[in-house]
Image (spheres, rainbow, N blue to C red):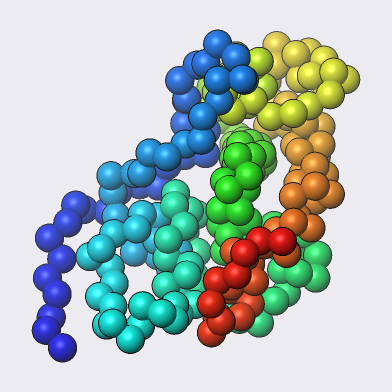
Length: 219
């Protein structure tokens, strides 16, 4: 086989889950995010679908391998390629799925198809904030999380009840690593009860559990 020389852009840093988004006057104007990153990533899930990563023979087109199915996921966390056994474990509990970086990547891709990716982005941002110890950095990250996911003007606003919003509005006056703890738990529960069952029945997950079969429609 002829060697392929890569001449594309140099890999860059992954997009932060707390990157400041453009403001939208209302949630009704939310549009799905279709913008692709400009950088190439060479992890198993491939943060962008670059033609330079895979050269397929004609006989390979009709039957995608597990790696080919995984490589199209965008803006993913760095992780190792999961085994088939690890993928099957994700169906045992939502906790096991969320504790696995590869599992979070695949679940996030599913949420993107339902236009609810902001739930995972918010959860990841809260996890990142809880690891921060520097007071100034905590305040800055807390402000960004509020603007990106709590503000009613944000196109990525997550769904929270009034009680949790009141708690956040009180705590944000003096931010700490645990300012959004109640909200994070509420979003985690929402993903568990609402999105996770559909994920297990989705074509995205089934195609990973049965990599030799053709893609089927989501039920």
